[in-house]
Length: 267
Image 1 (cartoon, one colour):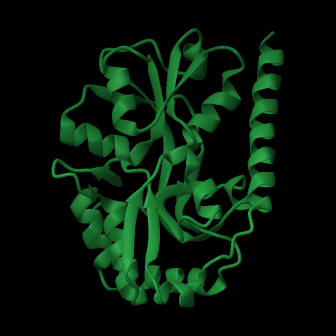
Image 2 (tube, rainbow, N blue to C red):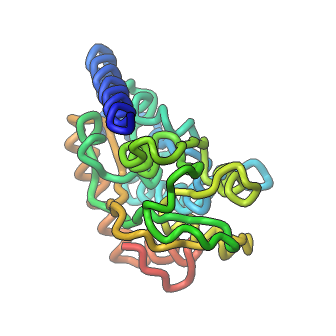
């Protein structure tokens, strides 16, 4: 039964990828390269639900590490930028469909995503980690996931890992963003959370959340990079050049200091 469940889950995931790829290929989209953007506005997207990288503050403004990085890169490129949010699980399809020029959104550079988009050089690195409430003492390995409710963000690498490794041993539950998922953990809606290490560590520090990381062995680690439509060589080159420039002149580290922690190294 476990093998059958795994097979069905993987088949459904593969079917979804194929269907998405087919629909994307069918779209008659004219990719905007750098010259088109210079004559208009650089349209950048993030999820708006991934603090401290992107979130809506108490004044209703979209802010965070990724927002400031987008603005710094646009300044180096000499373009006007509009940063907006969109549900995470639909960002790649929307970008391929021409709604956005780039996702500066802490997206992990994975082989599967490279089938649909192109990635720049990495701009930081994060890895998956397992999180439980502070009073949880019965999770120290994957075998301890058995029968538990495991949360992850829909469309993120943590969700992919949780689905591919469940083998019918645990029940996966998805969330639209990190704040809701952390709330789900602390209020007992889930028993375990799978999420990138950096944003959760920042959230724990800033909110004094009773959540801790547990070591269950090696988990995937991916570089985060900017994703753009395929076949945009000038935009790709401009973004990579701008990334190198903001790292060289101290702008990048000032953004890290502001949102992640003074002196933090996330590369």
